[in-house]
Image 1 (cartoon, rainbow, N blue to C red):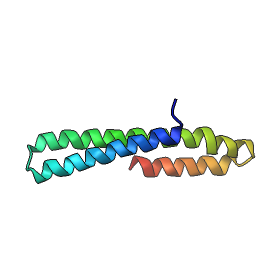
Image 2 (cartoon, rainbow, N blue to C red):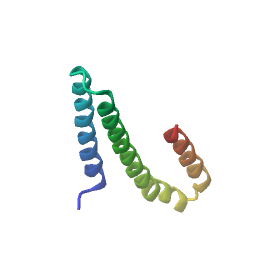
Image 3 (cartoon, one colour):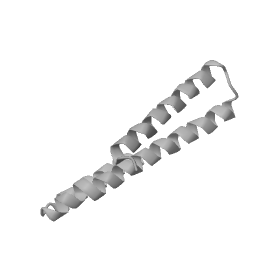
Image 4 (cartoon, rainbow, N blue to C red):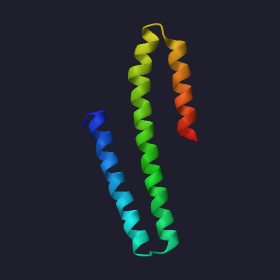
Length: 87
């Protein structure tokens, strides 16, 4: 099994390729709905990466902060991050 960091980097490289593909589609004047379909796929892939990062934060950083008595501050930080992420 890959380390979480390597998994995230691999996913980001794939997304980078998707975005380059989108650029080519626009340059080639491809059908609008095909482009929109690929935009949705890239967005979903980015959301997946965001959730992986959030999972790592919750299981690592947040759990550690709670154990060290900084639960309230850490939960506030997490909620602020979620608010930014969901916009």
